[in-house]
Each structure stands twice: as C-alpha cells, then as structure tokens.
Length: 545
Image 1 (spheres, one colour):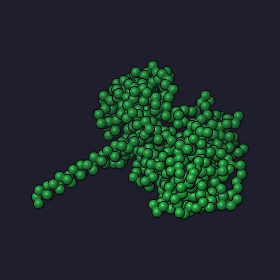
Image 2: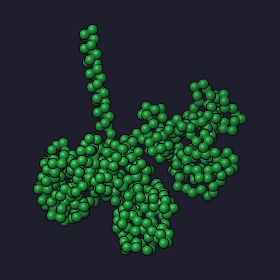
Image 3: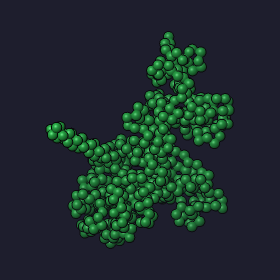
Image 4: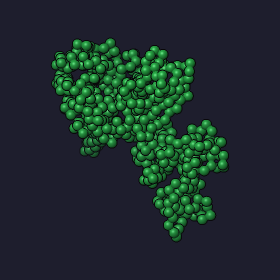
C-alpha cells in the first residue's frame, strides 16, 4: 500500500508538471500585443486599458520627454497608481521616450546620449517601470550610428529583465537617407527586445501627400518584409497598426472657416461613423488596398468639428481601417512568424474592435468554434478569405441554420462581386433587409431566384437541393453517364435532380449514413463553410476568368 501511494504521488507530480508545461507553452504561443497611450488625461488611462478587454501585454504611456537641450524630463502624466494597477493585472508599463519631432531636441539628446541613457535607466528603476520604448523621430540619417549607440547604452545600463524597444519608421521602399535612413534595423536588433515598426502614415497631413490609405495592406506587408530582409530576427519584429484615419476636403475651396486646409487631417477611427451618420455619407471598402474610405458632404450653412478644426460646407473623404481592414492586417504576423503587433494609439480606436482583435491575431477567430470541431479549419479559412463573417464579432454560430439571405451574401463575396450596385430592386420582402443589395446582385448574376417574382424569403432556410442547384448554376459541372444515383429520395423527376447528381459526382455533396440525400433538409453555417472551402479553387477560377 505504501508503495502504491508513492507511485500515485509520483504520477500526480508528473501530471502536474506536464500540465504546467502545456499551460506555459500555450501562453507563449500567443502573439505579443502592445499599444501607446498618449491621448486623454491620466485619470482616463485605466479605462482606456479596460476597453482592450485583456488584449495587451505592454502599455507604453508618454512618461519620458526629451527637452530642447537634450535632457530627460518625466512628464506630469506619470502616476504610480496606474503603474501598480497594470502590474497587478500582469501588464507591463514601458513608457516611450519622445522628442515629438523636435529635431534640435533629438540631436542634442543623441549628442549627450550617455548621460541621457543613465537618466532614463535611473527613472525606470525609480518608478518601477518595465523598460523604455525609444521614439525619436524626424532626424536625418547622419545620426544613424549615434541613435544605435544610444540604444546600446540603454541596454547596458538597464537591468536585463527590463525591456528596451525602439519605434522605427516603416521603410517598405528601402530608403537610406532622410529620417527613414535614421534607423539601422539590423544593428538596432542586436540590443532591443523588439522593433516597433510604425507601419502607418503611408499618406500624411500635407498638401504633398497623396489621398489614400493610412496603411494599405501592401504598405503594411512590405514594411514587415523589409525588416526581415535587413536581418532582424522575426521574434524581434512588432508591426504597428493605425487606430486613426486621415481626411481630405475634395472641393476647390479647401480651407476651413479658420483658414486651415484639410489635407490629410488625422482623426480618431471612432469619429468616422458619427460624421457619416450626421451627413448621410457612405462607407466603401477598397479591395486592392484592403482599406476603408468614407465619403460625405456637409451642406451649405452647416459645419462640424474634428478637435479644434471646423469642417465647413463641402465634399470630404476619410481613409481609415475598419474591421475588415484590421482583420486583414492581423493575419500577417502569423504568416511571417513575427513577434506580434503594436498600435498608435489607445483612445482612437473603435472599442468593439477589441472583441475580435486578440482572436484574429492568434488565428482563433471565433469563441464558439473549438479547434477540434469538425469544420473549424473550413470556418477559419472562409473567414480569412472574407467569404463568411461571424454572427457577431466573436461568434460564428456553426450550428445555426443557413438562411437564403446569408447564402446569397456568401456567394457574392466569394465571386468578388460585392462592390456592384443592383440595377433594380425586385423583391418586395427584402426592403430594409441587411442583405438586400447582395440578394439583388445575386439575382441579377443568375445565382439565386425568388420564391416568386417579387418575393425572396430572405430568412427562410437554404436547403441542400437549393444549394446544389445554385452551385451547379455557377460552375456547370459535367455529368458522367450512365448516372448511378443511389439516393432513394432523389428521383429523376425532381427539379434539382441533375444538380444533385453533378455535385455528388464531384464529391462536393454527399449523402447521409442511411443512404438518403435529404434534399429539403436545411444546411447549417458550418455545412456552408465546408462546402465553400472545398470549392475554393473553383471560385478562384471563376473570379480570374
């Protein structure tokens, strides 16, 4: 008995050890995520972090500034109570050291870099901070080596368990001069925990800026590629997303009431929707750049404010990242195996973004789809492709019956026709329905038909035989004769007979264990995801024809 007890204790210890290893491995497999805090008063900082719903590993507030003579000043924003609260939550506080584009301050700081590095290290220790993020910007490439040496000194003077990170200009074009050439990616990577690549401001506030995305998917991805090509280890690359947009006034009179031209004016992402709703504007998604743009007109005699800037009557466009654009960017850290993401900055974002941010960053997507669920791979794939969205930001509802409206929307998206506008609206029962436009597009493309000429029944279930007929209408699969139809519930007189035969011969649709096909049975959202993934190459072929 004593020997049995000893064996049980040993087994229990081994199991506990194994569980601890699994837990540790799981936590380490998640992608890193940090964000800057600059806007709002310090009393709002905790609430800003609360909005992120546990998504952050590091917050980087503006506690350290470089003075005009290159010295360190600890800003009034530092509150030890905030630092303590973040530590209680397991979130690191790594303030950023900024010259705020003051070239003189930045140069003097680097000229006196040894003294500055010592003062920063002392302040990190004094206030129980977790390191420093260096955000010196706007200085030319002649100070490149001095900047790298400053980072080396910080690494030397700070304890090994304290973070040293650097905010770097995105450099997808490989520029070696100007302020882009100021950052020696490869040399910096020897001393830092990570480089935080500011993969935004592809367009900026200037008459010289093109009107376009703050960060197109091409700009974002090429910024990652540049760092890797420079020899930066993947686990030291963090890529930054913008939580803000930029606005342009499009009409000839581009000056506001106070004489300021609107040429790339920055505004919080959470300010876009209120402006669009107030002035009945439109929001569109540019498939090429994977970015959103909103257009609206302020009528004569009306105005609005963005911060202290008054928007007077005229035509406006705002480029910004909405959910679809952010999700496209969140797929790239996994694709390139980099450390994770950062962002500028809290207070700018749309709060509901945090419902899905961490899930998508870690390629989990939906909380109600377990990794071992039979259709999880298909669901994740069609979500990545943008063919199927969740029923909420974080749920897919895989067992929910697929409706006729959902089927129409999915097909239109998969065929790349979601940017079309219907020539007419034929179905009376889809007026005001969330999928009205896509349903009418699908009808005009010959993908779907109505229950009658004026009725679509958008919320009715989409049956298996209806799906088979829709897919056969699109792909026109050949039928091999003689037909060996083994389904007792599908006879040759049935309207969907040949479509069912074609889809089953292709191996896309199958029968049930009892040998039946059940043509009038409803399909689930998981069923549809599996079908769409099976036909991905066929959809791609149609799109490319």
